[in-house]
Length: 355
Image (tube, rainbow, N blue to C red):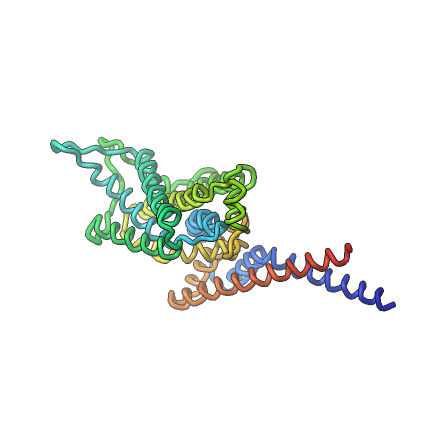
């Protein structure tokens, strides 16, 4: 009788734990629906077409950074430099369009928009490679390495134009560098071009993480770096890749923001790293590494984007917005830790029930 009672109690606890675990795994969806419902009630014109398009653009910027940040965090690292990379890459894009590259003998080379995008992407990847080298070769902690790169990249962005804005990036027909605005303001089938680029990058990243060996190695390194190294995984190569990819994503955002504004400012991207971290963690990426999904991160980015725009529409000050975003990060980490503990308990109960 006692054994039957104990078995029934265990079954009840298992059912309750499994239900709570499911809710925790769906927390990003729940948060997304909650903010949409809240702002549709309290924010004027929140569901208007124009506002939805604007919010999708802002959420897209967060999503690009968060995709790169997701891979970094899965390996157990962090990248604080992405916001500064956004600013520097935006300045380089603006400078290439306005001034080109001066060569000896007084000759200047100008690049078309595609070439500018490629050059800027290479710059972002190169800065990511520097982060990776500092972490893998010099054994600098990711937090310190990327914090240093944050300051260096931001300083270089300010030095590039002596702190001034590069305006009117329309280009010139005779130089063949017009069309930069299309990247940030153009649309295809009613959706902004940046959203289509995000779809391609997100699908590619999700496929890479699930089916490509290097993608699976990212999770292995984050789960247990020592075991991964002993099993033959080239851990340094994996870490180099994730920081280079994070730099690439930041470069895309720098291009998009400069294109949308048709101007480049060295302060662009300030604090965007916080949005990226918040989106990744809210989307289920574990700060202790080894777990995360691209789909969850995308939803988390839209939650952060909608939250930011909704608060602006309600007239909430930027100071309170920072407070709220900080609380979101704290709550997301607390829930993630609770989910890990609950997952362990449910697994133990399942093993006990099976035994």
